[in-house]
Amino acid sequence: MSKASEQPQSPTSTVMVAEPGKGGNPLGTSDSTSLERIRQLFAQPVLASFVAGGVAGAVSRTVVSPLERLKILFQVQSVGRNEYKMSVPKALAKMWREEGWRGFMAGNGTNCIRIVPYSAVQFSAYNVYKGFFEKEPGGPLDAYQRLLCGGLAGITSVTCTYPLDIVRTRLSIQSASFASLKKDTGHKLPGMWELLVTMYKTEGGFPALYRGIIPTVAGVAPYVGLNFMVYEIARTRFTREGQKDPSAVGKLAAGAVSGAVAQTITYPFDVLRRRFQVNTMSGMGYQYSGVFDAIRQIVKTEGVKGMYKGIVPNLLKVAPSMASSWLSFEMTRDMLMGSYNSGFL
Image (tube, rainbow, N blue to C red; front, side, top):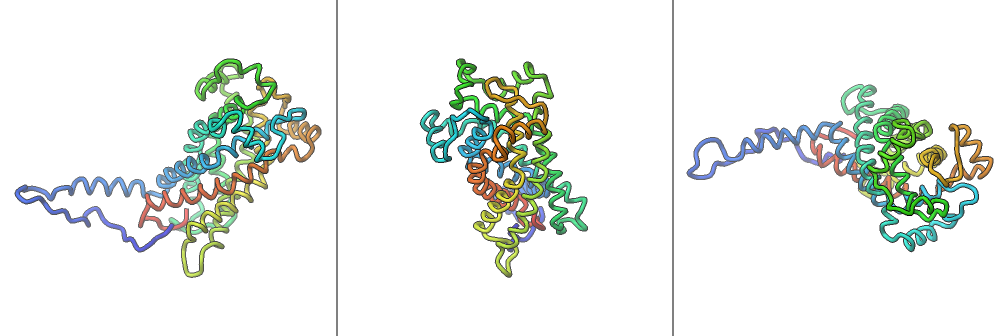
């Protein structure tokens, strides 16, 4: 969003000088024109946001991969399962001791394969939806319009990439030291595509790949909406008087605040999503017939705090995750759009 002093250049603004002794058109003019056309193509808001969103997703998830996995391990534990009933530092140490660096990164490859299109679709869809509310291209939106556009963008992105999310969850827990799962993992653990095919064939076909989609959508819509809305507000607060954009540190802080607020409010939906994603795995100790049945059973057997299992490592990861996501998004988007960037998001 920095609009710093660079001026748009037309395709004909670059003057190329022909090499001595070589007649004809100036050398390089055709290539220059082609490159300028490509640059203008990627400077379109929706495409620039798509590419920048993909970069932001990959960066943010890799940065916090150990905490992301630990959050999932906490979430899927039920009563009587104490393998990871410990503090975050001890759990991370246990993960490192038993699985090493691969344990920290377990499921991250799948997560990045999922998060790149997820984040790309989310940011580009947001630009599409906000076009219905702008009075003019690049015009400002109020807080509620950003909330609505963000919610719709979240629903769009999660629907497009949900099968990869459920596979990522399975990969994250299948190598963990859950005693009840050991008997089922004596052979080589399946990879992403093998697991995807196995779920499709043995767990009910296409619907198996969307198990847990309802609580996911219910949580993602307000989460993404709040994230966009709070980020814009926080971004303004971290912008110094007389400037249009905050510094890199200000963007990091705004991203951390928006992620923490949005995640805390919507966290119970995330717990429900994880529980349903592993609901049919043998040895997990629970079976839910629906969303309300899951809430009833969790509250009855684990208390209200059961709806917030894993929130500590989650909040520890949300700040660096969203901070790095927003900063890398803005930097990539500004690089692609350059002087064509006419406004925030």
